[in-house]
Length: 243
Image (tube, rainbow, N blue to C red; front, side, top):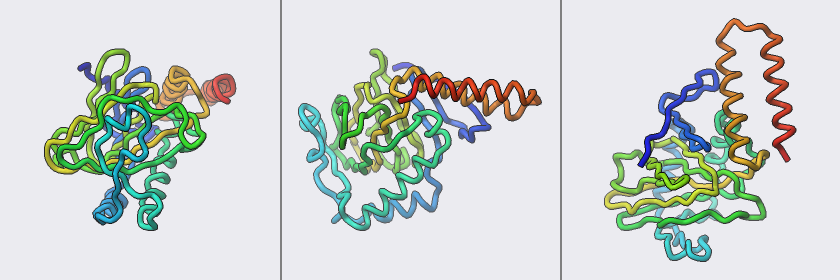
């Protein structure tokens, strides 16, 4: 296992504990505020809203997937999913890092004791949208369950992620990943996929670095002409990298 690198960009309102590592594994704290998180968890306490999660897995992933999944068609579930989608897409950091065009799909999953999701890769297209960025938004605090870490294999090195409730992890959809078996308690999380305006992960990482630098310059006495040049560079890179 390799440690993740830490970086802070306060002008982007990145929280302490936000982490990123090339090519763009990113953790962002406090995507959900406490009242919203509490309301969503209250909804998820309804046992009638859950069904077998294997139904949405295909191929080899179906055999590896052992969890429960929120029934998206239920009215209460629709409300929770709407709150989650709004929080994700309203995050300035998510927008800077993922350059989202739209969400391909959003799912809420539950892992009880003995459940897990073995190594798998995400489908290239979900609901007709290319999957560029995958995410996990953690709805349970780490002390509420044992095991259950998200483990991402990037270039043969593993990153283990188990952040506080309300935090989101973003990573390229090309990475093999798994959810370690839950050995105690219950793990709740929202997972999904983003179709990005910028296809290549390395291009998204460059744009995020530039956005971070621009934010940090906001706290410095620099000439407006310099800021204008860097904003123009960012916009031209979006034109060059974007679709």
